Amino acid sequence: MKTLIMFSGGTDSTCLLYRMLTTTDDQIIVHRLRMMTEKRMTKISLAEDVVVPPILNWLRTNCRDFEYDESTLEMPDQIMVYPHFGYGYIGGLLMINGVADRMVTSRIKEDTRPQSCVKYAVARDIFYSLMEHGLVDGGRLRYGGKVDAEWEVPHDQIGKIHEYRMMPQELIDLVLTCRYPEVVDGKVVACQTCEFCVKVAAFMVAAKDETIDADLYVDALLKKKGGFPYHTVCVPTTFRSVK
Image (tube, rainbow, N blue to C red; front, side, top):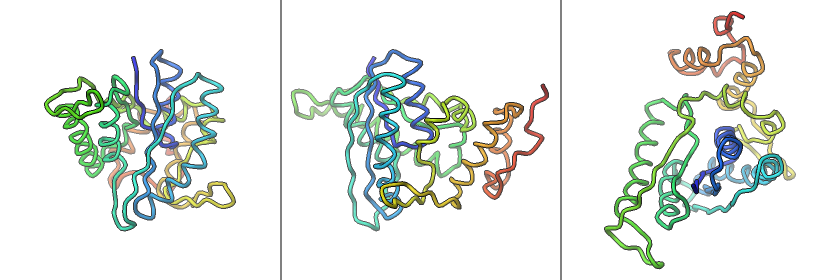
């Protein structure tokens, strides 16, 4: 089976690609969408330019080979385009051109906030509209053709703490985690203060402690009023399992 993986170089997509390479025999096609849109997404894409090549090199060296390509979505600076919208559209275009049999993306257990769910639903509508009404045949778009392909999210019941426990530390060290990164002298510098930086620090602490029940930890955070405890990297003792 040919599997298209939409990749960014972040923790979720890196873990997904690592698992697909090590647990399946699929022919893997990796596609990265560079989002050169509003200021924040442009900074993230420039940081991805730095971290993606070492990640891909590590995976090819330590796992197996795969195909890779990328595309760039450029919009005026004030225009915001959510990444999953791009995945739905660009991924859909690749699928109707016969690139793969299915598309998979990283969507984890914690991605359940209403806003996130709405964006994901809209992106899927874009993708499946292309599958339903577009088929590229002989280099031409033939309306009415239907492509039998699915958009799958293998990690939708996996929490981020699980991802850190699945990946080798040397791979974790390569991924991009900050949402407000700066590229200085060819290196990515994380802000260390945004909610993603602090949340990742919390998960890293939890992932290294084998006494912590990962499922209980994630479920408790999901139910916590106000969302994740971004203000702390402490791991509450109530999440620890009894050995």
